[in-house]
Every structure is written in C-alpha cells, then in structure tokens.
Amino acid sequence: MTNARILDAAVELIDRSGLGDLSMRHLGAALGVEAMSLYRHFPSKGVLLEAVVGRLLAELVLPVPGHARWEESFRALARGYRQLLLRHPNAIPLLATLQLSNPGALAAAGAVMALLRDAGFDAKTAFHVLATVESFVIGFAYWEAGTAGLRAADQPPPLLPPDIDPYIAERWSAITRADCDDAFEFGLDVYVAGLDRLIASR
Image 1 (cartoon, rainbow, N blue to C red):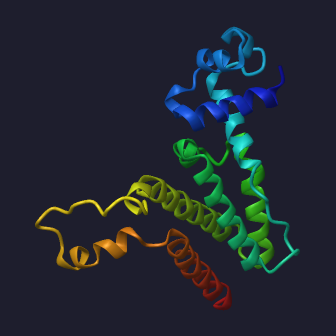
Image 2 (cartoon, rainbow, N blue to C red):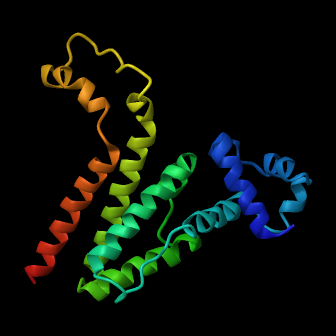
C-alpha cells in the first residue's frame, strides 16, 4: 500500500460521497484494509486531508515565469483551477478553507507568487492578487456546481415566485441557459484588465 494509492482512493471517495463520508474506516473499506493500517501512512485525518489537498493541486499545470506573457499564464492557471474544482466539486469546501501555510498548497501558491513578482507586482500586492483570484475562481465554481440543475438542457426553467423582480422574470429563461464559460471569461477579462491598469499606473 502506497501513499499515492491511499490518496487516490480518498479523492475517489470524496468525489463519490462527499467530504463528510471521508473517514479512516470508510477509506480502509474502500481499499480493502483495516483502518488502523492507514495510520502508519497518515497519523491523523488532518494530515490525510493536507495530503489530499496536495494530491488535488498536483493536477494543476503551474506557471513558469518568463515562458509566456504573465497575462496568458495567469489566465491559463485560473481556467485550470476552475476545471480542477469542477472535476472535484465535493472537494471545493476543502480547498476553499485551506490555509496558505497548508503544505499541500505551498507549491501552487509559490508558483503563482513567483509569476506575479516576475510581472512586476510587489510581494504585498502579489499576495492580494493571489487571494482575490482564488476567491473568484472558487466562488464561481461553487456557483456553477450549485446551479448546474438550472441550466440542464432537458429541464424547463424552475418556476419563480410571483413577487420576483420583473427584469429577472422577463429574462429568466435566458439567465438559466447562460453559458458559464462566457461568464467566467467575462470575470477573468475584468480582473486581468484591472491588473494591467494597476501595473501601468506604477
């Protein structure tokens, strides 16, 4: 039994049943081993979750400063993070609440900070950019995963209460069929444009 196999099984369990169902007992059952044997690899559930974060973030293609314009690398990273969250929607709460000091997050955070420092941002601003773009992507993925049923092509738009805002009522069908890719790219365009202006003003 390897750490990698245990982490793959943990991610599979989260994807299938949610974070609340992840326990050493359930994980051991999924792997066909006694739960106590897992503690030789991960001494606590907290340590296991830290490793799960690293396993998930390892799916990201991290930017390398200087290999492309920073805006292109930044956009690619944001898109990649969104896709990671949509592949593992049950893990979004875990990634949304992790600390920057989480060992599993340090490599990804460091790569983003290096990209931003290379683009000309000072350390404080680079951290602010990292925090806000992570919040944007996570928030968007939360909304996208949570409202997926509204946009199902084979389902009629849900009924609205009679006192709903008339603008929303008039455009409800279009709103519920809105393209999430377009909406995400709009937000990303606005964000990058603001950062470009910030750099230009210095």
